[in-house]
Image (tube, rainbow, N blue to C red; front, side):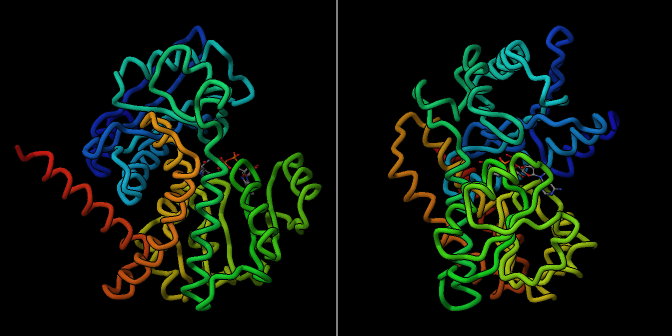
Amino acid sequence: MSNKVFELMKDLEHEQVVFCHDPHSNLKAIIAIHNTTLGPALGGTRMWNYASDDEAVVDALRLSRGMTYKAAISGLNLGGGKAVIIGDPSLKSEALWRRYGKFVDSLNGKYITAEDVNTSAADMEFIHLETNHVTGIPEYMGGSGDPSPFTAYGVFVGMKACAQKHWGNDSLSGKKVLVQGVGHVGQYLVGHLTEAGAKVYITDINQARIQETTNKYKVEFIEPERMLDLDLDIYAPCALGATVNDESIPLLKCPIIAGAANNQLAVEKIHGRQLIEKGILYAPDFLINAGGLINVAAEAGGSYNREKVTKDVEKIYQRILDIFALSENENITTQEAAMKIAQKRIDDIAHVKSRL
Ligand code: NAD
């Protein structure tokens, strides 16, 4: 891979990739800055036991690119960035987070971090000891806390927009919805769905989370290997990426895919097109899951107001409907339509910025 990093950066159009190493705290991190046209690159830090360094690089690059488009389409003045830490999340320590915080600080605000998979508000608290360029810090420290409830609310609102488009009515009452992954986002999403009267199925590989969810909500657990047998109204991927792929598409029995996971389409162009051919309406992931980013962006902006954030997250509804209309009018996939709108905003603002 080492000789391919620049090729990949060129293909995905990255500005900067920073490799961070500290043997004392066992830190191996990659900070990927995709595009800072609209503002500093904001994106969470993921901790994962990657099978190889190459896999980690690809993940950081793909995820940071998604953040650029997510911020742009959400009307935020932020660029796209993301970081990954290579290692076993059960071994994270104060020293690791603080050393990582120093690396973030060394970028002087060009990259602002937050939570992601396997990182929490408590971890952000350690990072904050070494840098101000961190969001999603706990509420008792003046931050906005875990962004997941806002991500989940945005996904719920976005699902309603999908329902409106498909059934001409945005009620989710009685709809059969599968939530794949009942972690931070999935749990809150299940809460909204059960409250709205949906028939909710859940699947996960973590026993504690399954137990927690089935104790708290009226849901039915499905073994992960059986989930594609279900006849569904909505499939909500809320675990990891690339679950919409060559194997799953032929088996999926649902008119709508709308979930929180990043990079849901294994290959954007191919699988986006296959979904259209199969008559499945796909809510672009980086648009529907932007609630958490909208929340941490408000925190980073220094004038945090929960009510305003909630209203801003609700704008996802209309954005989704606009994207569906553009996709139909131009015969492009919904993902392409969303990218087109996001790229246009980046180009327009770059033009504004280059003027006196
Ligand atoms: P999380 O780690 O808290 O939850 C993920 C859940 O998925 C876990 O319960 C895990 O056990 C489960 N899982 C993993 N592999 C699985 C599999 N093969 N089958 C079924 N379940 C599986 O993460 P999260 O914060 O809830 O985020 C979920 C997804 O949403 C991620 O892709 C993340 O990048 C994306 N996302 C999260 C946020 C946020 O605010 N947390 C914002 C935007 C996007």
